[in-house]
Image (cartoon, rainbow, N blue to C red):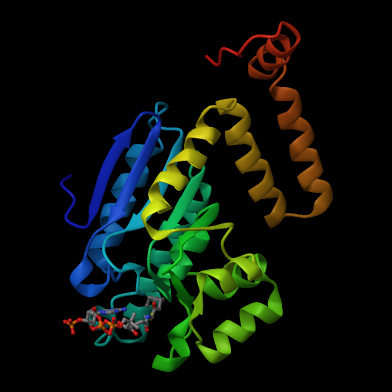
Length: 256
Ligand code: CO8
């Protein structure tokens, strides 16, 4: 499939995907979701790709769902559009590799919801964050009401959701919405350095960290511990044993 909106670059063990529809500030339309669905299908089958980075072209990461596409929808169409978007963002969250959002500019509405489906977020200083849906008489439809409080806590989430205020990168850092703020020209370089660091670790262990942490958060503490216990054991006799032997033999591990 040829992509019109997603620009993909494979660099070593990383996939760097740029959302590129700058004339509409990368607003998310049906075409974006179809392309993203296809991309996720293909990435999930690629063992050579260890980390996915999502970023945006121009002055926005993503300025929200495409309002021009939504404006004429009826209630059923809007619910369907929301459900399909939720499904795609859930697939990003569940993808079998870490996903990092490199937020270059506006991350608003559906754009912030997309960023929150990623495992963590690095922001360039000009980035701006918000859930402005109530300005339009709407609420988030891509799980923003669910992910935002899980990331920043209930009161920070409701503050952003009620006021529709845009916050800057430093405020987002203070809230825990982003994990690091960089100079704008350093955003991709620093995000790639973090992604390469992750890609150098035990690949199976990294996948299991994601699976156990995310599944645990969605279930209860004891079920999460059971899952951790099973997956901890599964690393013995393969990657974990090699990692520990390499430490004791004072050499670099050879991940196969
Ligand atoms: N959708 C469609 N077009 C957009 C969007 C958008 N979300 N955001 C910007 N654009 C377009 C503008 O219409 C404009 O187009 P044109 O040049 O043809 O007039 C172009 O992008 C540039 O935008 P501006 O001229 O407005 O740029 P500014 O720098 O002056 O302002 C802002 C930048 C502040 C980001 C401003 O564009 C803005 O407020 N955008 C809308 C932000 C917003 O409200 N986002 C939330 C949308 S709703 C949503 O995301 C709900 C998600 C759940 C959906 C569930 C499915 C049903």
